Amino acid sequence: MLIRCNGTPILSRTKTIKIRGFPKHHKVKLFRVEVSTHRTDWVVTNELTQDSLPATQDACGLRWKVEQLNRELKQLTGLQRCQCRKAGIQRNHIASAVLVWVRLADIARKTGRTLYQVKHELLDDFLRRELRNPSVTMRFA
Image (cartoon, rainbow, N blue to C red):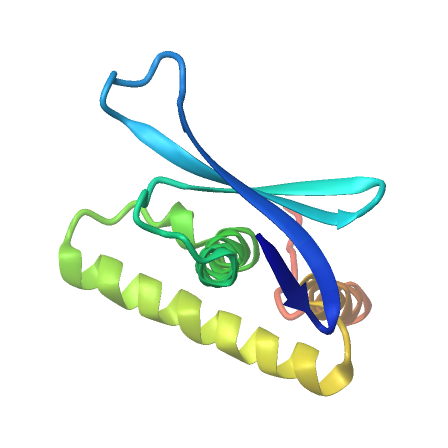
């Protein structure tokens, strides 16, 4: 099957396989995409009725965005550090973490930096300010 991506023809092939160690009836469909003469990408789906490579790539792209969001929420906002047992408190913690992520993403988009750069620069500024003029004074006996 020959499809076009941005006007460039891309050769793609599909194949249904069984993965060793999985249940006998569980199969996956592979889409082979030759991006260039030196590079071949594989897209894997467990939806055997899927015949459209672009639709499968769109779904994988969306899943990747969700994975990226989860990773950034955990790494940048401390989402997984909540040790509360009550659902309401956990919900508030998650909502606060998402609001922090949204604000970091907004700053990153406006300044043309990554979320990680924005967070670390904010922490660097805070640390410099506290070292220069501590908000909590230490008293020694």
